[in-house]
Amino acid sequence: MLHDRDSLLGQLHELRSEHRDLDTVINRVTAETAFIDQLYLQRLKKRKLQLKDLITRLESRLIPDNIA
Image (cartoon, rainbow, N blue to C red):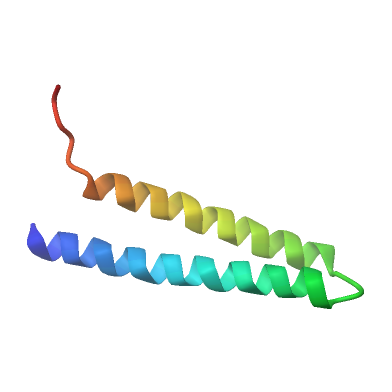
């Protein structure tokens, strides 16, 4: 069980890092580029949203279900 938790925490760290990196790239592309490739930007944003969904699912797996 502890190994599973450590594995999930490692995955979360990697996903959060990629999410931050994508955020940086998106901000840079929109701020510094006169011509923005909308398809490229859309793909970046879609990937960022996918990562956020994965992060949310992993976080929910780390929180134990408490029966009230």
